[in-house]
Amino acid sequence: MECTSGDKKKTNLDNVSNYILYKTMDKNTSSKIKMYLTAKDIWDKLIQLCELNEQTKENKFSMSIQKFDSIKMKVEESMSDFDERVTSIIIEMSALGKEYGNREITSKIVKALPRE
Image (cartoon, rainbow, N blue to C red; front, side, top):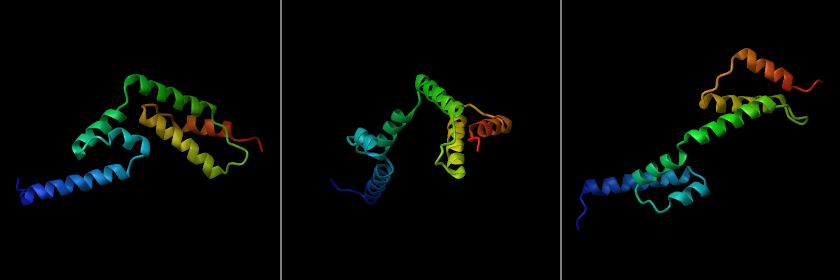
């Protein structure tokens, strides 16, 4: 069977897409999609694997609120590291639909700091 120039171009683009997809995922995820041949099939499977069902979303939401409520600055932790941890949790909660106002965040941070 003869391949046209357009077929070769599509195959090349698919191979490049596959390469990019595989390079950007961890070993656990790549093992779940290794049987798929086209970038479209890989992408569809990734969407299926990464979509949050309601129970998973609720669990992640509860865990992130719990993390925020129980956060404390560690003794050996720098202020910038602590700020990164707090920001990460706030972004996580925001992505799941929970927004805190500046007053609530500031209050939580002040309470989480060590006395000294």
